[in-house]
Image (cartoon, rainbow over all chains, first blue to last red; front, side, top):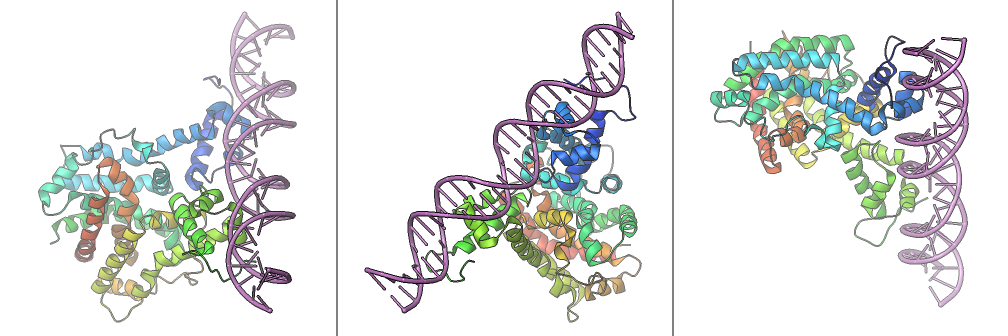
Length: 204
Length: 204
DNA sequence: AAATATTTTAATCAAATGATTAAAATCATA
DNA sequence: TATGATTTTAATCATTTGATTAAAATATTT
């Protein structure tokens, strides 16, 4: 069993491996990742990986859980805040999500891909399947537009924030868009999306 | 070398393999797919797969090219039609895309995932990197809203159509949404998205 | 039906890959 | 510094997996 205390080197070996695992897993996905890739990226021997984390699967679970918390962590506190308006919630979600994904551009595709292969991954996060339905956010939308299923607006908000990151490689090829231009565009969207969602909510 | 003519059985062996490959590759992705999975799904011996298609990679290229054409085939003809209005184009894209993806729900995640690992896959489709920039569609948007980069609206349209399919497993867990409810929701969106995009284009 | 060509199979190979082990190196502590 | 614990390594194993081969089965043609 690995000890809990490590003295030398800026980053503990365990943390170096985790860091490398985060990088490789999110870039290539579980199946395409070889434990040797992670070991190399961490600058350590392959055996160390199994020594610290027992198996590829176990190491992946750790990374996946972290990423899931990041991905949905933005959402949960906002959705059920009874003290803020719908507009404020939309602004907050757009702003926080875009900032988060600018720092972790590979996050959405990683989470959604791995979730496809194994939807059980976020049972942990939301035990009750009705979590979204009963949120304050959804109720506020229902109040404003009782004629349209509230999920429409929720999904649209998510899509407006996240889909551009999924399309990024497409835009870069089809439209010759550079990295900086892309980030600038996403920063603009922090302002634009709340305006758009307001317009959408009003539209008849 | 395999002959081109096959007499017995409803579906030629070659086609059975391709069909199985489509299914397994799009469900699990390239890396997670084993050639034995495909062989089993096709009800044939593993050696046959290599006999007909030489390698896993070659078979994948065929499937990938097909899927890329499906995925982007909807877009290309509409984007450069000088004879239709912006409104018509939006209606057409929303309607065609949603119909297409209802029939091929795994298409967006498959294409976007595999494109991440290998962005070269659609060099074939759009040689010129400026393809989108110079399209009639983008020009029509620019005319209506010169103050905002036209890609914003293009990406938003795509996201409104496609992102719900990427979120489907999430919705089904978080909101306990059933398959039929989901499809119904997407059918509603064929009408809603054009209205929303009009509202977005007007919003100040 | 005989001869030839095509399709399919079972058995096997070779490389890749996740995991283990025993020994060496390093570190902490008495 | 000597002792014991911890960390790291090199070598190796076992399984999975993509691919090949030679032979059997089936179809086609003469």
